[in-house]
Amino acid sequence: MTVIDDLLEALGAEVVLTGAAIGERYRSDASTTGQSLPLAVLRPTHTEHVAVALKICDRHGQSVVPQGGLTGLAGGANARSGDIALSLERMSGVEEIDTAAGTMTVLAGTPLEVAQMAAETAGFLLPIDLGARGSCQIGGNLSTNAGGIRVIRHGVTRDNVLGLEAVLADGTVLSSLNRMTKNNTGYDLRQLFIGSEGTLGIITRAVLRLRPLPVARLTALCALETYGNVVALLKAAERELSDLSAFEAMWRTYFRFNADALNLTFFDAPHPFTVIIEQDVGGSDEDRERFEAFLGKAFEDGLITDALVAQSEKEARAFWSVREGHLMDQLLPGLINLDVSLPIGQLDDFAGDCETALLARYPAAHVSFFGHVGDSNLHVAVWIEHPSKHDLHEIDAIAYDLVRKYKGSISAEHGIGMLKRDFLDHSRSPAEIDVMRRIKAALDPNGILNPGKVIPPAV
Image (cartoon, rainbow, N blue to C red; front, side, top):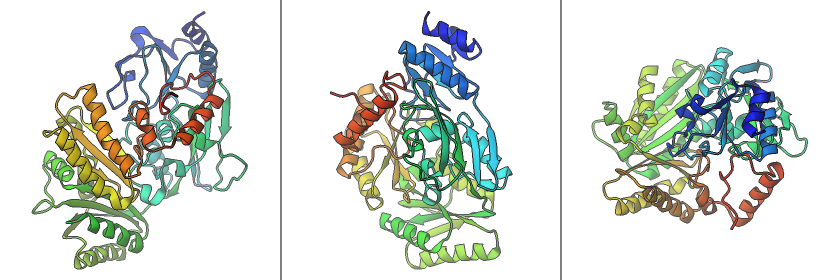
């Protein structure tokens, strides 16, 4: 009996899709680098489905590639023609909100925005927040340890997870749906699965930490002349604005491209840097006065040359629409998005070196930068016309060689997947990679879970 026969017998045709029933959407994540449809697609509705499926696949030595919302940019959810994709899309829903503990128990296939709205309805904030919130899923957020725009206050995804349930390669269900902040009972097994991109187990549900829902947010768009001023403004904001929730910087080319694309004008002239500052507040007139006084002092101190304070949610969304840059993918088809992390003081030095190197190799390229800054994260947008596979690899090599020079990380929040795998040694030592291989071998001895992703093959 084949693995497909076994799966169909155990789970049924509603769970196991084959042949023409496999839709194009399962071909690739948002990197669009996936080339093949999988051998089959499994669409479980509960954890026991996942456990049965993995037990069968492990017995047959069948490779399994987990898929969430397919918004990743590292090829981590791409299946080969001989792989079985396991989609969590039907395991969706918020199971419980514990108002006393301030936690949410949620299934892995739940879209992030659905979870955010459920939290808000209950009077809480789910601090995990990404531009892809409408389509990314909680399981994928955890599997890649996604970052996002609220990291400066609430931390990355792993900082907001109290407990989780995961299924191991052999079908063992490892359930630790802890709801306590303090639980010091040996190894913290949840951290093995967060950020492991489905190579160690399939996350099926999680307990997420919730925060009090802000009454209001104040948002400002600031123009600055130097990167030194950007850093100085960040430090002043961290010192003087309680509950600072976002600090997003855009370099000139990025801001101007996206503002023009949206037909929006904010300042009389372009500036080298534009920053969004956002603060969670109680909503009083005094809060706004203190916020505006902070900006006034920053202007007097020469840190900013101009600033706009949003007078409505609509105006705040206009600021953020430029930062999120959703039109770039339409206007620059095939846009390459690199996601790196470097010491805060060196982000602009890296940006300058990276732009110079990329334009020297590809003079007609679009190269632009934006970043969260407060958490060391810089995004690089690169576009060249009709890139070959060699071009894509060369662009990666140019950027990641510079990341190694600056002792940074080749991935701040998008994961490693397949596209960054061969550059992992730019940020991790041989000893670290060896330990990763040993952990993988211990939890997935037959190597069926997302094979070829994250960890480069041993030489």
